[in-house]
Picture 1 (spheres, rainbow, N blue to C red):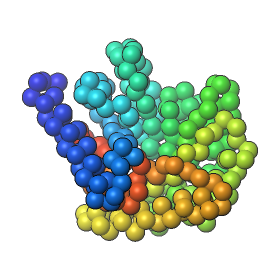
Picture 2: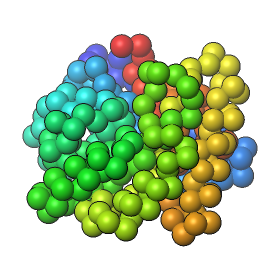
Picture 3: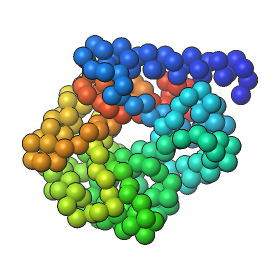
Length: 236
């Protein structure tokens, strides 16, 4: 990457951090409660390496094989950097073993069967796997996730029966809207679901919601992780 491109990347990262900061302050929240997950799917590992050099430490990927390759390269080139990898895309059952070996956090658990598979592979690896339940908040066929009325049963099963899973929160992907305000009810609903779980004895700290087009709105509704790609790295 040229010096000019590197400077542009640094500026975009700074701008996203600034927008998170102001969105949190407007909502009366501490900006430190919001974690930026930089989405690097389909970008070359050289871009990830530059982002690490500029201070980013949490990266979101949608494909297990792509992430595993990038992770290995980053570890070789930056052995002392503490980079965290998050799976934000759909997880196929036949990719679970590699996903457990690759990711520090999996955002897309959407069934008891998948949770059991991840737990089993985490146990074999001697690992406690951080996970989030992905909740389906719209009727779009392209959106994955478990239905709202089944979230409690899945969360209860995970927390009571799977010793190698650490359920830390919920994730959702609302429909895409040009106007980010239209995403607000979906973000509010995910927070309400988390609050209902807390009343039932299942307290979860994390809400993974908001992407490049609506992350400021998500922060205003309580997001603790925002998944931002194009606002940092440009269009793929």
